Image 1: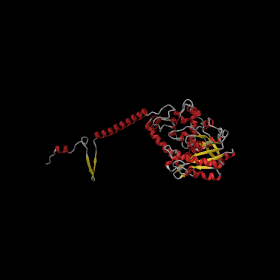
Image 2 (image 1 turned 180 degrees about the horizontal axis):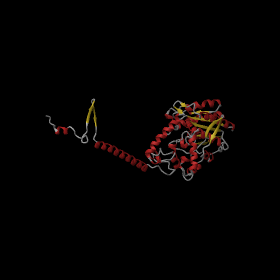
Image 3 (image 1 turned 90 degrees about the horizontal axis):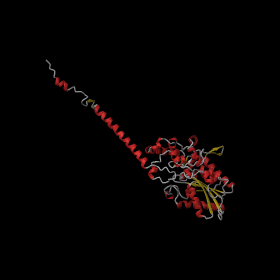
Image 4 (image 1 turned 60 degrees about the vertical axis):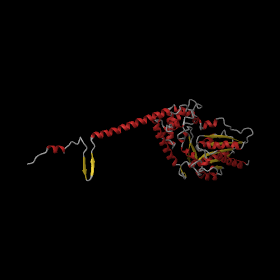
Length: 406
């Protein structure tokens, strides 16, 4: 006779809903958490995510409130943190903010570099009384520093400086050609900065200038049947830029041209959108902008030199030849100033030396005077020290005196 123990049976068949079950299979242990504990885990993760999101939103609002960028276009000292958190703003947003009601009320950087404005401003076009050597220099800040030093070294020299912020050779060459009817000089200097040569693939300082854009524009050149052909930008003056800001169709036409012709153009970093309103998203866009720029630059120049297959190198070589030929026709001495800044060694010299030698064009290259690889030749902002600039200027003046028999 068999007896059934009900207490033992009930003790071995407890509900899995009241405790975790442990099943052993081939030495491994499987643990099933009760549904209540699983729900608590999901809830905790969601709560943490919500708190993190609220913290980011609060931080974003605080940054925008305490480090707001000034709205006054002529405020050139916004503060280091204000500037830092604004770096990722769209180029369109930055440029529109630079524009005042008039040219004079616009930001200083918005007024710089416009070719037509520079050629008509009150710069000397004739030598002053008692001055026997008028010199015109086309380039950027580096070449302007040489021009300023020239007058200090030789009181008989007067210089006229045509420049743009980080101006590429296409800007200088266009200014040189358009200045022909006003130019009365015995010496003309074409300043070419190695790091700005990449601007031959651009049409404006908006895309070329990066985090602090200068909105001036310049032509882009193609080489067609052995001759240079200029493609003019659809905006050529500060007044036209201000007009385009208020005319969506006009602005869109300019942006369409950049999308087609300007390799530095990128819609994500150029166009205004909701990202502009978020400090955190602006920082993310800044990182993308740097990546995009680096990719473009690497296709043009690396640590080994300029890409020999870059289609703009023949354009640059023809610019130099045409510059010299026009100057000689005018009875002026042409000089090409090759400025090798940090990271470029003698790369610009290597590209242009064969052309300069073949066409017998006088030149000065800074790589043998103030080596680009020696940091002691440069100040914090990347320009030459006063001592290095003086050495370069002495070389330029020596070449002038030699060629003119002074």
